[in-house]
Length: 239
Image 1 (cartoon, rainbow, N blue to C red):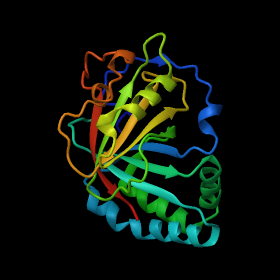
Image 2: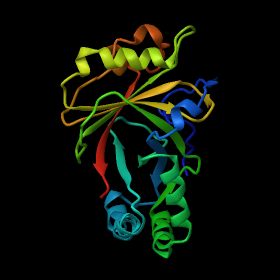
Image 3: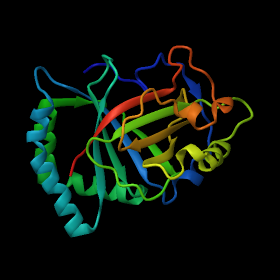
């Protein structure tokens, strides 16, 4: 499989270390788990779509039998790059439900069969990248065709994540707009950013720089090789 290292694989990676108190972000937080995937050989998106029936059957059984809900999204990058074809994003309500999901998966023949057919079509990085959600905007329901923007910030010395969150909550540009916006806090230590701003919108915003629009550019380092500090994806909900 093509080599995939960090969530922002499109960037020239500049590794840094983030020593954060993860526990205060983990409890009862929604969990975002990104996998970066490439199609094998001549396979295309339509081939994966044909294999989703068994996966959706597994999710339905899981919800009916155990009350577990899991969102899955297919993020198709709008930018040109060579390291992956798309991102597979699983969203869990909390760490407990994430753990329960994987326990059920290990004992489900339906899920095992799905994995077998899936792995013929795509190969995904085994090192999934996990984040915890801090909500900024409430009451937004995402749908197929939404644009997903991801902005990233490496904090300058003297700035804290709480400053970013409070700044975004007070920023009028994101109030009363059709956005779903959250701050994602990574749970891995060797990174070149401290947080992501994850935003979904039902209309296209060209060249959206989430760091500048959010009014937090004074708190974030500037990436010379990716000055816009943001990536754009087309979003498809698997349900």
